[in-house]
Amino acid sequence: MHLVTVVCIYDCIACHFFGDCHRVGNDYYIRLLQLLNTLRLTMVEELVMLDRSFYFIVVMWGPKYRNYFLEYCLPTLLAPGNLPALATKRPSRFLIATTLKDWRELCNTAIFREMQQYVEPVHIDIPPCPPDRSGCQHMNVGHQLACSMAYRDKAFGFVLTPDSMVSDGTLARLQELAHAGVELVVAAALRFGEEPFFDHLTAMGLIPSRKRSESATPLIISGQQMASAAVSSFHPETLSYEWDAPFLFATVPAAWWRVPGEDGIVLHSLSWAPLLLDYGAVSEHDTSTLEQWTIDGDYLYKNLGRSTKVYVVQDSDEMFLASWTPMAESASVFRPVRFFQTPFGKAIHRQLKLLQFCSSFYSDTFDPLRRKFFFLPVRWHGRPLNTSWSAVEKGATRTLLKSVTPSGKTANSLLFALRTMTWFMRLFVIAIEERSKVFQRIKLALSGDINSLNRLLLNLKFEAYSIVGIDLPAPTPEMQSSDADCPEA
Image (cartoon, rainbow, N blue to C red):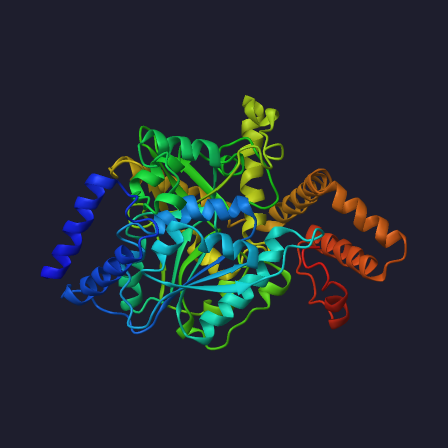
């Protein structure tokens, strides 16, 4: 107890006279903090040590995402209720899948050295992303290696993206749930606009001007504070998921409603991020999703889809995960339809929305596990909850139940028409957003390239099946091998 007091007094005095500079590159200070962390864990009588480790997993490369990780993601993980609150009998690890160049840059920062007090960083070397492959698909290389390592060691996995932040207390709460036997913890994951999100946090005094990578100072942001900034900073894509918003898309991963007079929303989501994945509960690790899709696909369903010990985060006060995208990215795709803003258009939109959401809800994009969680309301709020929320939640549930229970030939016919319409809309969006890649693929196919031709035929077959509304038959080994060079197609 006395040694802990000495360390704390030393830190306070040093901070008072020298600011944070005494922490940067000071091996003596690091050793003291390591000792403090060890003593703190042994002194807290109510703290229950987990038998197994946490494995934090992140895949990244390049200065942009390296900067996101060092300035935002890692500083929030260093908040008192996160990495410093870890209590595992075996050392926890941070599995970082990146290039050797990026790894060296990470190791040269003060905040990375600060992280080493609590977890052991492990480098998983991955090659640079090929120019003809999307970043999302290339991340699968790192995810497959890191998740397989977590499965091998039967660890508790926490998969992060470098452009994300977690609220203070998230890891402390995850440890409680792990100790209670929970095997999977998921949180709703939607996109926020980078610029307004950080502007709000800065205005709240939560993001200091000094670079965290140099000062090694944590970002301490509560769930309520992060949610308050987030619900005022939706990316255009997320804005299109508001139920009454004048949009209509083939695939919709969420629906949300604002609570009148309150700083928050009621959310029903089909998009979930795994905050805790107990690989000790996975009998056989299935990585097939990472071969042709991304970890956001049905990876969780294939590995823990039958688990009855699943916990859904429904309140932003408990835990909050925020990820962001520049406002201009893909903004041109998510433009409101003017017709749906007219009185007559609003009436048409209400009916189309019901059918459109039904079609999306039962599509192959969303597995049974995601649909199972969908009707659990998630509350993101910047102020304490009150009685105003109940009416909105009940109304949202009634609307959504109505939207996913169509019956009769009329509904089926309308759904077929809607699928056809949204199919043309989706192809138009793809042709605009990925025009250079599309033209390149078509050119290769016309020139006689057998892989490109097979890929084109498979895509055409998929589109035909999607209009009819039935599943595409499983690809043959020949199809899989011909498509191996470009999983994103």
